[in-house]
Structures are given as C-alpha cells and as structure tokens.
Image (cartoon, rainbow, N blue to C red; front, side, top):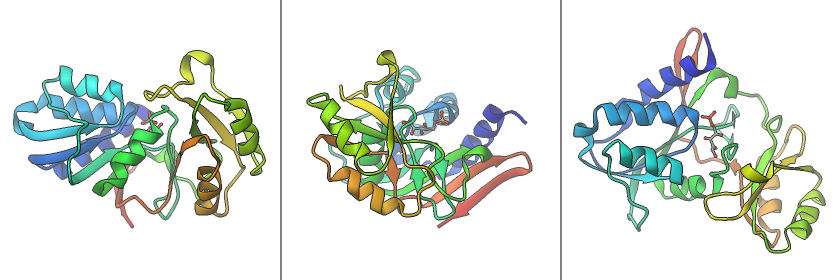
Amino acid sequence: MDESRLKEKAAVKAIPYVPKEGFVGIGTGSTVKFLIKLLVEESRKYSDVTFVPTSLETMYLLNSGGLRTSTEFHGSIAIDIDGADEIDPNGNLIKGGGAALTREKIVAANSQKLIIIADQSKLVNKLGKFKVPVEILPFLAEQTIQNIENKGCKVTLRPENKNRSDNGNIVIDSDFGLIDNVQDIQTKLKMIPGVVEVGIFHGMTWKTIVGKNSGVEEINY
Ligand code: 5RP
C-alpha cells in the first residue's frame, strides 16, 4: 500500500481521540493534513474546540475549513496530535522535517497527551538515520553551525527557499549517525547559544498510531 494511504489510515484512527470541547494541538506535515481534512469534513462537531496550530500552514488549513484556532495562552491542551520523521521503540522522536519543530515542541510540552500518527516507514530501532533538524537564530549562524558540528555531527544546509521556520529562524539538519543516547544529544545541542530548538522529542509521546499494510497499530508507552 502506498505511504499516503497508510498515513490516512493512521489519521482516521486518531479521530476518536479528538475531544469535542477544549483545546487540541494540531501538528504539521502530510500525515496531519489527512487529520485536518477529516476534522474539516465534520467541522460542526468541533464547534466548541479551539485548535492550537503548530505552524502557519496548519493554522491556515484549519481556519479555511471553518475550525477555530488560537495561539494565545491556553492553560492546558488536552491532546496534541502530530506526525514524526522517526519513532523509536520508546516513542522518542525526530521531528522537524517540515521546519515546524519549535512550535511543535512547545505545543507538545504544554499538552497532557501527545499522539503521533505515522505510516510504518517512520518506525526505527534507533533514531538518527533521519538527520536531526535544529532551529538556530540567523545571528552569527555560521558560528552556531560550527559549534553544532563540534558536538560530533555533520551539518547540512537546506535550500534557501526552504530553510526558514515560521519564526524567521534558520533550520539546519545534523547528521550524528545512529544515536545511542538521544537525551544526551538533545541536551548538548540545546546548550549551544543560538540554538532555538532541537528536533529530538524525548519521552513526550503518549501513543503512536501507525498505518501498516497489515492494519493500524496503536503503540502505548
Ligand atoms: C514537521 C514535522 C512533521 O511532523 C514530520 O516532518 C512528518 O511529516 P509527514 O507527516 O509529512 O511525513 O515534524 O516539522
């Protein structure tokens, strides 16, 4: 089955977890777009929900489908549903392929539960084949990149028309190879002045819903 069909299957299974009132975080990416489509189709059911979008694109898609969004203080977001670039057996993630990692992490960190929806290709034994996205300030960016490489990785720059986050910062990709200690890499990178956020999400996931050729699997952590 093709990947987008598997993404859609995962999104369908996530719908029952969306509450009918309160605040709900919505991630970014092609898998989440299937979820948004389903929400928009039933938008009347969600008239008491305020969605907290993790990117301008997600906000646009929700709003143009008639769903309410807010990026003001919410107190508590019940559920956040997002995609991922890699998912390890403990639910640790690499995210940020779509450059939305900073807002995605803020929303995830302020949500009671993070649900990841993905196709089976995202499941890995160890994170790191997908390069770790890092958002950095443009100010002295070359120096910051050097400091990132000094932590033991090779940095790749994205094409100029695709290297900016919604926050106006630069997103680069760092290749550490397969990572033994994701928490350690996350901490080391975050300590570098100029680093805004790191696309390693450690210990945040509550559940992963995976679209597979054989069906849909729900993995709890
Ligand atoms: C964006 C992300 C996405 O969730 C991640 O890139 C997965 O995208 P897709 O659902 O298109 O495979 O982290 O910053």
